[in-house]
View 1 (cartoon, rainbow over the protein chains, first blue to last red):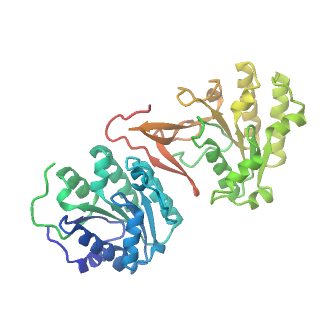
View 2 (cartoon, rainbow over the protein chains, first blue to last red):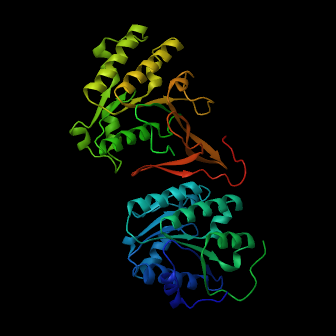
Length: 202
Length: 232
């Protein structure tokens, strides 16, 4: 699959029907750069233009870090809500963000669904996006079977309500089982900065 | 989950151990009813009702005006006991009749369509014989059902009990049983909800995970992960 140019991400998202599930595969080489490009394209270029609310499920990094990256990209935080699934597990002293809800463990997948639902009910804007960062981080903490069940229920629920879901994946770290999962629940795949090599085996 | 809700006039046990969300679920049921102009009555047996109202104020769905305008009424049962002269620790058959009659009159006078008793277990503590408990619930259910009042009876059980009420008779008589509990999965404690029975409607038989949020009770399907992770 060919990579997209960073400037094309928003255009690709715009072209998708509402309620789509999108796998966003980022290359591991210069992951930080790719990630920043993704944030800018999705939350600033696409999200602000679509006047959308974003619910960001942060599993890879604590939401306070993601929030500071959004600030550095001049993305206003008043339309972003976090479901932070990692900060409490890290047992670090927690500075809580007012626009965040904290789940105690990445294994409490039902609670992730419930907190997303909470923010969706609180913000009834017509356009809403749910970003899950990332399938790889969730796979560290969960068995493949329960992870598949989670994504199947969650993404289909959001689809049925016209809410776009973007699932982040580190391309080179995504084994065939996760690839299958993503292709099962997602309608489209967008690839950014991925080296042209075969994905890692299971 | 209930194909349109709890059938009007049903008596339903809300069973669970402490901290599973029984009181919050019951209160939300009353408040949601009050929002559509169905009068509600909360009979508090163990906790002072002003404390319950203080806790209720933390929820976004609660509006104190519903209490001020009489759509929602809170009554402390110990005060009712005192007014009825039921100060003895043990209730006789006559006392039960007196108590049921008083509750039915209150419900009728206030024109309530939804009533919560929190908890029926605490009322039953004062009753010696199982037949009398059966009698209490039957009479209470019937008298409230006769005025089209739907009743939730909060039932306290231990954390690992394989039944839905302390005495085991309540669930047989009630029209419905909603069981709240805690399920342990890989060390995580998840609040769960299941509908065990509900007369007069088809209902879900699946297990759900419950979250108590400022917006009220939210439910998500319990994930099984393709195998039998089971309750501890």
